[in-house]
Length: 66
Ligand SMILES: [Zn+2]
View 1 (spheres, rainbow, N blue to C red):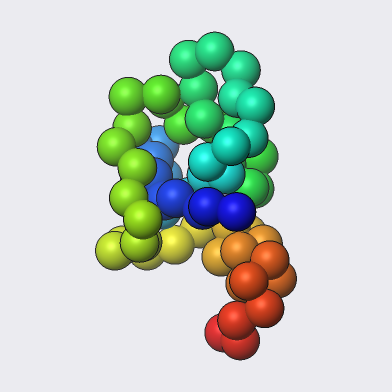
View 2 (cartoon, rainbow, N blue to C red):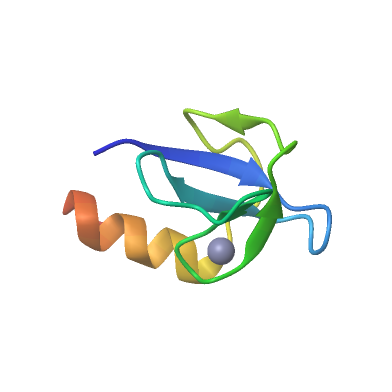
């Protein structure tokens, strides 16, 4: 499983995007349900303020304590 992070221009938070997830055309759907435009550059690591809901979802997935 590969999680990538995309900065949303809507709220300026990093949202977690599932790499292999089936996304509707034109948008990425983040773990929290937030939609990001497909032109959003995705990074392997979050380097900004993470979306709380996405951070929790990813932490549960990876088993990493936060
Ligand atoms: Zn999010």
